[in-house]
Length: 347
Image 1 (cartoon, helix red, strand yellow):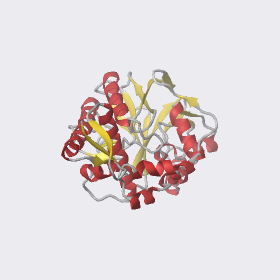
Image 2 (cartoon, one colour):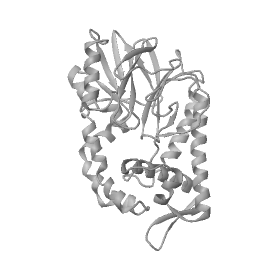
Image 3 (cartoon, one colour):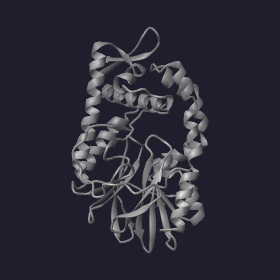
Image 4 (cartoon, rainbow, N blue to C red):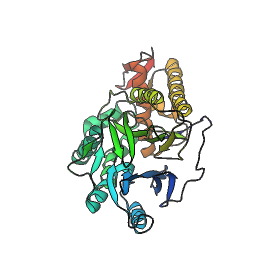
């Protein structure tokens, strides 16, 4: 996820709670801050009041630190309360890592969108595909350095160590339907780009918008093309989702995102995110007017700081997302050079 300039937003809670702490962030909504072992070092899990108990929105990653935080919460601020269900916004391990653990321990039902549920199941059962020649060619043919391709080989297998699995049954969340949680009615929204069918929830009566990773206050979510769908256009999906959210969600909604602080100023933030990606497209267009560039050659154009192999993989996926979007809109043309690498030139 990238950080960039933003509009002035309003933060009703200017300080995040300590990791592992639970605070009330709105009536009937608790904010549970959990540590992550990444550069983005936290996730916001939300507990929503639900008929004498609490519905859990996302779970945190499956590691000992997160389990210990849950154990402390269950013995402390959540002692004597009932968890009613788990809602998973999308397949990423910081969001559904402990679903299997919570579901099994408390006999909870799980609700997710169909795509996110089955995508997570596919990653668990077909993990060897991440080492396949076709997946490696996705990186190599687009100009990523051989040593980085080698470092990325099977890198996604780490996913398996960060999730406890999903139950064999679930309840499907469908965009446009409503979901009742306690005394509230939430409209279900889904959006692509960061994940295939990420779930967001909006209670219009109380102006509460659980935005997951789609709209975050200070960073833009990673929007990448991945080897399993090399010709996809996740950036186009993401921009379309942002436009739809701006139409559907009131500007004065309280935005409860999965990272950073909850905030007011949704429409301005959506404008920032759209402008950020348009600016990145302009940088790519300029570079490709000057000379043909492979996606690998464009990584240092967009990301000027040093990157390790893990960060390079995400940066490369973001570059390909912008390239695919610009090809789809006729701004770039793709050519195969004499060295066999795929490069883009300005149309």
